[in-house]
Amino acid sequence: MFPNEYDVIVVGAGHAGSEAASAAANLGSKTLLITMNLQNIAQMSCNPAMGGIAKGQIIREIDALGGYSGIVSDETAIQFKMLNKSKGPAMWSPRVQSDRMRFSETWRDMMEKTQNLDFYQEMVSGLLIENGKVVGVKTSLGIEIRSKSVVLTNGTFLNGIIHIGDKQFGGGRAGERASTGITEDLLNYGFESGRMKTGTPPRVDGRSLDFSKMTEQPGDEQPEKFSYLKSTKPLTNQRLCYMSYTSETVHELLKEGFDKSPMFNGAIKSSGPRYCPSIEEKIDRFADKDRHQLFVEPEGWNTVEYYINGFSTSLSEGIQFKALQQVAGFENVKFFRPGYAIEYDFFPPTQLRHTLETKNIKGLFFAGQINGTTGYEEAASQGLMAGINAHLKVKEEEPLIIKRNEAYIGVLIDDLITKGTEEPYRMFTSRAEYRTLLRQDNADFRLTPMSYNIGLASEQRLKLMDEKKEKSEAFIHFFKQSSVTPEVINPILEIKKSAIVKQSDKLFKPLSRPNITMEDMQKIDFVSNYIDKHDLDHQVLQQTEIQIKYAGYIAKEKNNADKLNRLEGIKIPEGFDYSKLKSLSYEAKEKLSNIRPVTVSQASRISGVSPNDISVMLVYMGR
Image 1 (cartoon, helix red, strand yellow):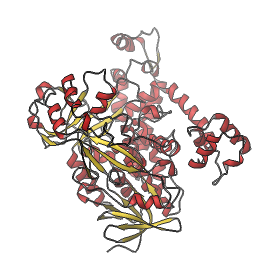
Image 2 (cartoon, rainbow, N blue to C red; image 1 turned 180 degrees about the horizontal axis):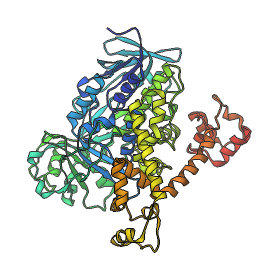
Image 3 (cartoon, rainbow, N blue to C red; image 1 turned 90 degrees about the vertical axis):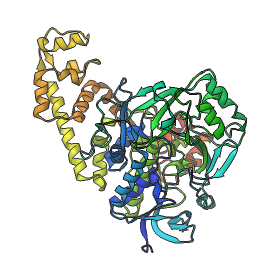
Image 4 (cartoon, helix red, strand yellow; image 1 turned 135 degrees about the vertical axis):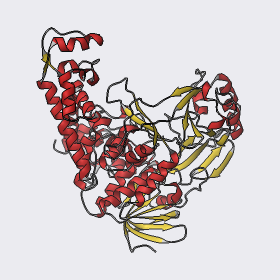
């Protein structure tokens, strides 16, 4: 039925599991993906969208590394927006509305075409552990499947409980049963676990909505895409989204259900996502607000189902329905299904190494919501890294560890294992101290070479990246060497109400001004001729403009990152005994002994470890 032994078994086929299995298989590991329902591979359990603030950067990084999420998002997009365009490029974040059904179908199609990847539908109920090392899994049918490593990506399924008002029932997602056995198994091996909560809004019938009472939310006029590959194309046709608002009347109706709300009556004791609260939490937490935005998002090209973004709730279905009827455009609303909250087990991620391998059991990796994160993008990036490192572990090769100054993925993983999390972790641009370096436009420059070196990113990807880099550098050189006369540049500057010049100067000078864009520079004949002659695409033009306009900021952050990396280079010996350092604070000894940082730099980021504690460590280590 199965080979004698797999290299990698991936448990769970959500966004983390799909990326993990694909990465391991593409690297050459004999891989098995086990899930409770093969019809729901890479299911969009919540909103039908990929990307967004900081999350869009993560999807670009996954694509640059050779993952599938960017490609699938492009193939199944129904609307594209680049968010935060009014701010600097470090904040620009791509986002797509996706066709939910096509998204899952495309993922499955891509994985079925991936060599070295097998599939099996059943529930994994436990792990096979021998001498502190994972050697396989056991299923609910009692089948034992051997492997050299295991990646757990269980999402919200571990002992999941769904809440709708005062009703509770076991489940990992609407209409699907919870997964049992794994938590209990891991607790027996010394792991700590906790509970977290997330939720989702009702889905409604678009035929019952009056969109004329809502505000249209169109996509970008010139949509871009996620993947750096040429094989995916930007959208030429897009679906509209809409925006409406709650009101004081809606809030009063919702409050009628608060006494039976699991959020307020003690039924839910776990932490939910701070930055994506339920509608009842918004009303309670922001009592001064008389309305909240609701985004009405289509679920696909050929469906009437809509997702009500901003109305996540665990209130009773009757209260949900009555309140939503009072929202403009929803007077005759028909439900496809009510919203609900779900509680599930997670394992504090301080129990992991930077590779996402557990400290307790060799060869066992965790990725996604099992680590306390929320969001498809956060899960997918962890899955990709866990799949890569599971393969490298099996092949006895050096792990791939991405630093904080190299990718948002590096920030995400370092935050999780160094600081832990007591609420569902969501990525924001503010979490990255080097976000000017970690832009969505240059993820291929940062990550494709390192992925190519381990055999995941293809030669085609590397060639595309090299070509883009060469063209960008040549165009930057052109701007620095070419001069422009006042007669040519001043009409452009006057239109933009920018100070005119009195003598010729290099082209990069006007482009360095905040209000002058590459589009303005293309009005100069010899610039547009250069672009046409060298066949420069949007990516090259954007890269050139950013590198010229933000050169000072980029150089400053690179310098700061270099300083950080000097501390990253100071390794802490494995098994280091912190109790020997009498000058360390008690809290520092406790935290350092628990988390066991690999470098002095990581130690400095642990909450409760002071600069004085770091100085003591450096002195002890002869630094």
